[in-house]
Length: 196
Image 1 (cartoon, helix red, strand yellow):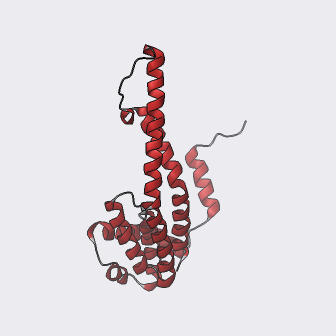
Image 2 (cartoon, helix red, strand yellow; image 1 turned 120 degrees about the vertical axis):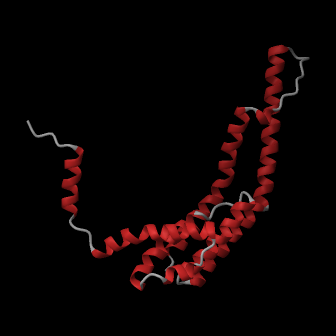
């Protein structure tokens, strides 16, 4: 019968097979957290990204900037409220600072602004209409259930918007309505990350 290995032994064997990390990999592992911290600091405290990146040597700066860009891109989301709009603007401004190809970043940002504009204008109207339609359908179903339970003459006013089933259905509908916007936004996020 063979020896039973612990998870630690298996992991150590796999590490040995991988070999030693290169100097570039070590440098990347060391500097990525610095870039993530820098982006978080920029978004929260409004530090000067250009000055902060200038602290690093040129071979280090690319890792710090790339990690900062990942955090900034993750903070660009659908403008559901004013706080998110402010964060989006700040994140996009930060991306223009950490990326070398400013024109490509601006092109992607322009397309993102179009998505956001559509989301806040036509998308808001669609969401409002869908909400009203869902509320009407739920009210009709609730009234029908009440009449079946209590008789055809029974009419009760029920606030369907407070019903957990209504709220769950509304969340599901919102996800469907936002899906195309999120798909395009994800595509542009990936594009921005691929820009030098």
